[in-house]
Structure formats: structure tokens, C-alpha cells
Amino acid sequence: MSDGQSLPGPEIPEALISRLGRGLGSLKMLPSVAQEALEVANSSECDLVKLAVIIQKDLRLTTFILRLANSTLFAPPKPIASLHQAVLFIGRRKARDFIITSCLEGVAAKVPHELQERQSLLWLHGFLTAILAVRLNDLLQLKFQGEEFTAGLMHDFGRTLMSVLDPVNTSSIDPLDFDEPSQIEGRERSMLGASHAEIGAWFAAHNELPPALIAAIQFHHQPENAGPNLKLAALIATADHAVNYLQREGVGKGYNPLMNPAALVLENHGVPSATKTFGTAIEKLLHEIPGLAQSMIQG
Image 1 (cartoon, rainbow, N blue to C red):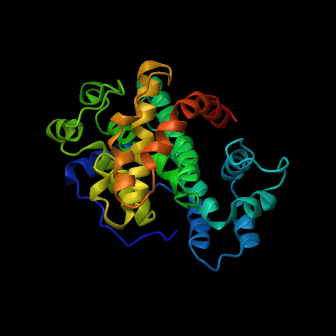
Image 2 (cartoon, rainbow, N blue to C red; image 1 turned 90 degrees about the vertical axis):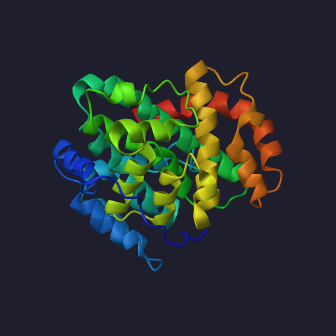
Image 3 (tube, one colour; image 1 turned 90 degrees about the horizontal axis):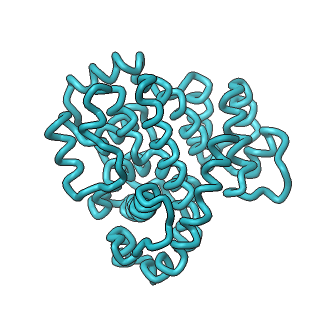
């Protein structure tokens, strides 16, 4: 699937940008090796051997990609021992998205110590949403090639950035109870000056991440506004809605798929029987994904 046409990232107040820069130390998300690797991976003529050689310069990035490539989620036929094998197995597009994903931990580490328990919940939420998005991508035959995993992991990254922006008031602005009313973004704008979706999308755009990823972050509460990236945004919104229930209730049993508006958006935009397929599979998936998420987080 193509990356889609470019959508401009949202504007956020300059005061927030300045505070974010002070809190993070740098608005640059990607270390030099990751940036170099991403530039190679972004090319459709990417040399996978060359890409692996670059990635190997960074032990943390190498370890992260090996961990994900060997995970049950991506199910290699046998354990992958070398980075070269991992890159050949996952391919260019997944390698690109894993490079982006690997850099999130470093940014999240800038969250104040007293909010790290909250950050752990957000990190789990990202992995649960990413894993569910991968499973739904396969079930609904949407043909995304890794971008759904990164979009799922990053869709709420603006909430992590909010913890950096206003650590004192962030729990009041965003209670993190996984009960998200329709006016959640309006509440955040009135209290902070921008919503978590806008802050996350601005940060992704500032770091020149793929337009489809920026759109999925910005519009995961309003996927119908995501333009050419509507299906990716709706897929993430579908997964996010179900994962919110899972984390709110502690179990997936009892989730009502008919209450998920984003699944209907997918069906109304050309995904045959999206609501029926989702409804049939979701209880089993919600039972399966917590174990997968914990294994990927813990390594």
C-alpha cells in the first residue's frame, strides 16, 4: 500500500513548542544512526544489506529490531540470530517502521520519574493497539505493510509529550482512565492549548516521519478527516476503541463491537463486511493480545 499523499501536520502554539524543547532537551526524535538508516529505508531501491550494516552501528536499535522480528506477532519460521537475517525477513517497510518505533523509548524516558507508572500504562496501551492493528490488518485484508504497527504504537504518543509539557497538571488534563469522551480533544485544547493528537502529530511532522503516520496520529479520534490516509486512521481508531475497553475493564469479555464507530467507517469506505469480521474476531483477539504485548515489552 502506498504511503499516501502528504497531509500537513497541525500547528500548535509556539509556547508549547518551546516548553517541549526544554523538557526533552531536543525536539529531534531520531539519533544519528537511526536517521541514516531511515533515509536508506525510505528509498524504494533500498539495499537491505547496506541497511543492516548501518543499523548494526547502534546496539540498542539492533537489539530492538531483533526482538520484534523474533516476536510471536511476526512469527518467523525459525529463530533469527543475525540482524542481516532479520532485515531480510521483515523487509524494507517494516524495517523503516521499526526504526521509528525504536526511538520512542528514548523520548519517553524524559517523562518525570513521578509519572513513570503512568508512562508504563501508556506504553502498554501503545503496544496493545499496535498488535491489535496488525491482527485486524490481516483479517480485513487492508494490505498495510508495517505502518499499522508503528501508527498503533504512536497514536497516543502526544499523551507522553503532555507529561513532559505539564507534569504537574497532566493527570487533571488527561486522567488516563481509558474512558475517552467525544470531547476529549476539546478539553485538552482548553486546558493546554492543543490536544494530545495534535501534539503527537506535530512532533511526528517536525521529525519528518511518513505522512500516513502523521495523519493516523492526528485523526485517530476523527478518522473520517484523514483524507487519503483514512483507512489507516480508521484501523487505528478501531483498535484503540477496543483496547480502551480492555484496559478499562481488565478483560475483553463483554466488549460490544457494535459500539465501535471506526469499524463502520472502514466498512463505509470500501472494506467489505468490516463490522461483521471485527465483531466475530474481537473477543478472542482481546484475550490474546495482552500476552503478546508483555512479551514484546519485556523482550
